[in-house]
Image: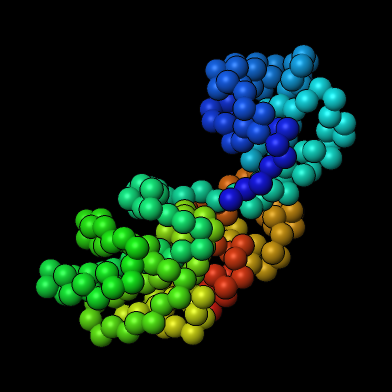
Length: 257
């Protein structure tokens, strides 16, 4: 999860990315749109100014007494570079699990060829799982960090113990999509056989070589906002992140051939 200062509100005119000041949504949108369209700050008890960031132009709200606004934008950019977009597939599974989620747990995906195997797997997993839900073609559930179980039917893919539920779901889906093992854990990802079969855009290849969006922008002759959004969209589509070392390893090992 992203961590911004408590005395800041961030809005792009369409959505509120962070509301540390607890301002009313209608006020935030009204002021943000005015500032972004006019490119002129609004002053009052709350100061709102336009800022160019890695996500494009954003309206930043803060206390009038806040000093060093350039430094504040640099701080926000540093945190925004950790941002991630999530696919509808991830969001849908989060909806199943949200009320049962506790930080430090694992999310797992169960895939089986027939209904009998699916029932058998549910029975085995229910001995330690917190919950298991039918999510269409797959089952999805939450499990504790420590697991001792082996299976020889179907496929069960686990995230690592995670703080954030969206990341846990993404990692479990990643394992289900790419790893060719009946029983797998995200933290052991490099040890497994896997199949990517995806196109790696040139922008992602450049990022893998440089590890830096600024250098990536210079090499591709694009601005930072454009290349960063290309990374975000690649992650959203493939579930793989070149910004995470173990996943970058996966892409380098199997995706650039």
